[in-house]
Image (cartoon, rainbow, N blue to C red; front, side, top):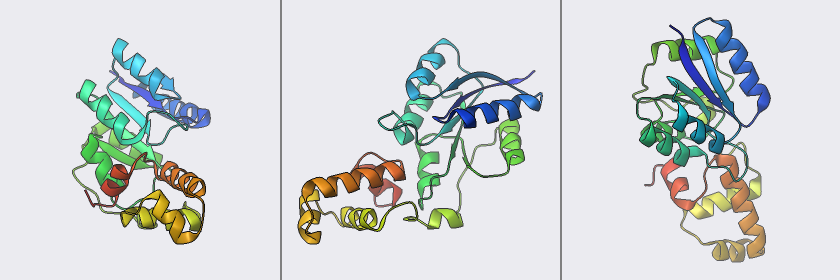
Length: 197
């Protein structure tokens, strides 16, 4: 009997590629492809697949990341959830697992390992930071890095603006851009990712 799979990723080419590869093995049947959390959550109410492959960071403004993982696993604890992402933050993989994901697979990884992971449905107990995860700020601009460091020091947007002689609006935009790239939406999630909470 084939394992049923749903895929949520905001890039159509990723969804189509995963469907092609998975169905080509003869071991999986893709029940649905979704570009957002809304479509996924509606579908899960109707029928829940054996396996869900989910991108950590969806389109801007979408319900994604830790919040979506927690919601899916709270509503469907039997679902085997694999988060597939290019996120490169130390501790992020561990936080994704703590939120309820059963496993994590890096974008760019060996697809044979993903297929094996899905077939065996092994839960990830823990993980060591990869070299990519150690490069915490590589996706951020230098200004965004400054803002994130200040946020980690507990500074407010106004304090950061005064420190760097920038407007509050500019700092807010840089903070929001950085958080988006890091796949988080608030200070608490920032502190969690850095192991402060």
